[in-house]
Length: 214
Length: 376
Image (cartoon, rainbow over all chains, first blue to last red):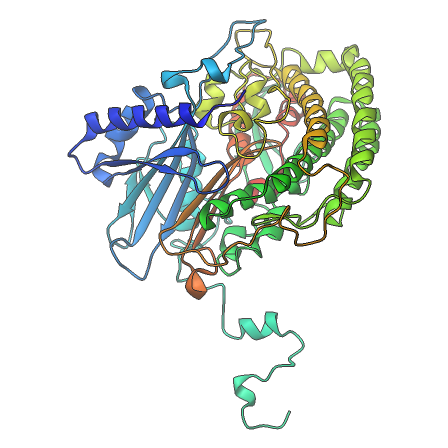
């Protein structure tokens, strides 16, 4: 009825082999991970240095059949460590073909094999410290990446090099330059936040009340 | 000449603007403007516990709150490594499919007046009320249920829920036939929908469109089938699929047909799940029973991530959560939401090019836009 874990596992390891053969030794790492909720499905996690991203993306799209760019997530890590910015891409492989008129392509899960098995890919790109984090745009490879990249720039401030027609999508169009609300310097917990929300009626003493009779 | 449709326009089904460049009556260019009701859910979530995020996810889409909350819950369970009892998974499946019925009815009810069929609105609202009543029994309110929990669901099925659900679903299975009799032979309906708004399957997938809109183009790809998450592999159903009539792909009529077929499948799933649910549908357990809820950790370590790919009523909704936020991992460090409609609306705006201005409501409505989830 639905895709089994064995099929999923086989597709993931086939993808892993191909990717390692093509990109082994270039700094691209590939591993098979499993979701840890009820259905422990396998997915492929890749990390990629930004300079190889376009080559990897083209290979994924045109040789490995990854035809669906579903989500792009930018993250800001201001406390440092090995990275200051991260971009996570989520891709899916969907066995979708155009059909002849008056027919439908009813896929049977048990008869799917090879590149037709749906697969989930996660690509992580860590960016070095810098005022303007930049990754190459994949807008021309997956059209679906277009508005995802716009959103990621708008909210997080990741620059997508080569992205055409970049503009604000969720924030107002006249937002100030450099305002990207999901960067961590924009605090959502301002001072007295806890008192406001956790103790709205003010039953609990506040530090400012120390020594006073309430 | 540029025409601005929206943000207050019957075509938009919400607050957004479609700017249309016209040459006479023909659309030659379009531009979508979103963001009118951007609430910053992703930022708010960074200051909330994992359990406190669920009500915000309910409010992402007021038409299908249950599926959005479920979608978040599966990502949180991936992050926190929780195994869910099977009974709870069945209850989630039942609640999500009832929500899908209610959501598709809301879509059809809003689509009818777009096309010029006002009767449809009243009929759909009448039937949607039955399913909202069922969801109210579970979650306590008509729209925002806050029903699924990390590790299970809030409450068990109430006494008599199964009987009422069966009766309503069986009644609705008959009513679908009434709808089909009214619509499939209505000249206005066919003339407005057939041959309008073509879109090809491969184009849609490359553009990030998902769900019923792609299934209308003749491919039965469905997340519930391709990446099964709940107990969808145990109940009896087939992904709905439509046969497009042109090499140009699916038209508005195909998208209407595929949603009707999905409603039939959802009815089938609810009935089957009520029969197969472990422990029986009419047994009542107390709150906090281990049959419906397991304990879940409240903190996620740094570096842990959770991802869910969920078939919402409008397509694949996805959540990506990174652990290790404030309070030693009590809050998400970064919560990212992928809304199917955010990707679909710009695509639909481009498919309108070449059609007449009068076709815009039909094309837009057939893709089922929801602005709550689009703007987040």
